[in-house]
View (cartoon, rainbow, N blue to C red):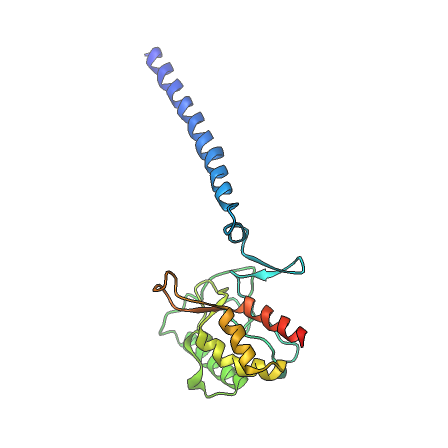
Length: 206
C-alpha cells in the first residue's frame, strides 16, 4: 500500500509541477508574446489614445464631455449612462453597468422621455428626430460608440459652435465611423472619443 501511495503521490507532484509550468509560466508568456505582435499591442494595452505623448483617453471607454458653456456646446456626446447623476451624464467612469430596469419600468420610461426632450432642445430638432441610442444607456454604461444617425444629429451644432464648415465636420464623422464587423455583423458605429479629438484638432488648426 505504501508503494502505491508513494507512486500516486509522485505522479500527483509531477503533474502539479508540469501544469504549474504550463499554466503559470508558458501560457501567460505565450499570451503576452501574442499581444506584442504589431497591430495588437495597442488593443492589449487598453487602446489608449495619446496626443503629444500624453494619454487623453481610450477608444474603448466613452466619457461624455461636459461643456464649459452649455449654450455653446462644441462636443459630440456619447450615449447616456445609468451611473450618471443626471439623466444625460456624464458617466461615473469608476463603475460600469446598466440600470437593470425592465422595458416597462415607469422610471426608465420617464428617464428616456426626459433625455429625448433635453437632446431635442440641445440639437434644435423635434423629439421625434432623436435616435434611440441617444436616449438609451448601453449595458456597460461606458460605450464609446454612437450610431451614425446620432452623430449626424449633432453635426450641425458642432459646426455652428466650433465655426468649422459642416462638410468638414461630416468628413471627421466619416473618418471616425467603423463599418459592420466582417462586413455583416452589427451596425456601423462612430467612436466619440476619436471624433471629439479630431474636432478639437481641426478647431485648433483654425
